[in-house]
Length: 300
Image (cartoon, rainbow, N blue to C red):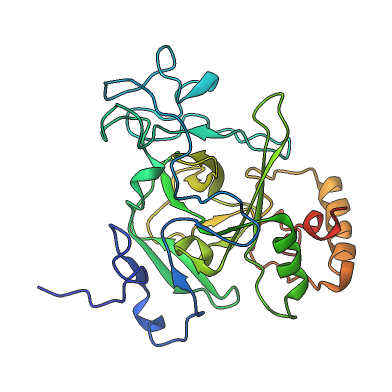
């Protein structure tokens, strides 16, 4: 029987090994510390590992809206197989959060409202894509709505995010993701995650203007959300996993809007001295440049 001797990038920190393509194992990887969870970084006032959300008193395997406060007023987040029920991300520019049961809940670990906290369950491989650098592909078929992985790293504040973007040198990758949530009548919540120095397999996911994953903020134990990535459609084995760095998913824009956005991106590529990288996703609706969240830089 053959033995798979490929390197586990997570160093056994994940329940499922994160493999590295054999032909790429000798290639120099970016230097970073692997962490399956978010950690507190500069400017973040809340430790993501602390349990700060209240628990429910349910004693069942399936917490439901009628008697469980965890799903809040939005209804159950997952079906019986753990697939995300709301598969239509909004186009408003803001995300709507999901609340899972947590460590203070009376329900069991088998509760259907515990998905993202279960960690990585799929076989993924980091490999060399060529013109896009490192990427991640699935080693098994992934059904629509399945949780794939988190985009984990340092949770930082706005000022630190701005400082890090401005300090980047030409050619360096920008890993900072800014997620904006609107949970009703309250203010918009912002979370900045940077996996450049400390992160998980999510840091190797490439951008695509027509992705197969979408990002959903999920709160488990802490008010700091986990940036969970779910399959936006059925994904084949050996297919590269991608998401839209702007937070969108469908991106089926009219031709005239694409032209306007492309011109704006070309102009934005020279904004504040930050040179944006070309996008090589190959999608028919590609806007030519990788997204850059200029609102972090230009915030008053």
